Length: 94
Image (cartoon, rainbow, N blue to C red):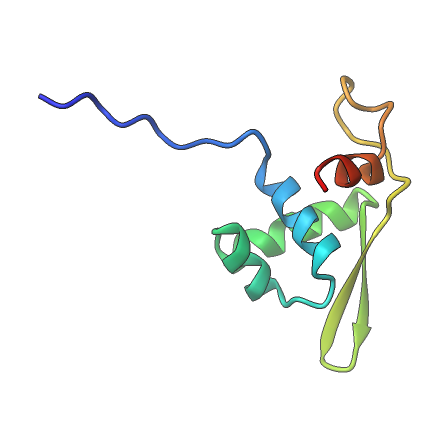
């Protein structure tokens, strides 16, 4: 009998993946972000709402599309990282 295949996991959360996409591709639609991250568009909408409510992302309407702006000075949320900013995280991830 074959050994079970471990469930895939990553070091970064979907919130981080969405944040990276919005930073690198600010004009992408949420559908395009979902395709890049590999999650549903609905999940991306929830994550973007979380990021907006936390003051990490702001949305600007341009015609029929949204452009997303990252607030690089926002502090990370977990106490272990709270002394770092979103901008530092994005810079470290290249």
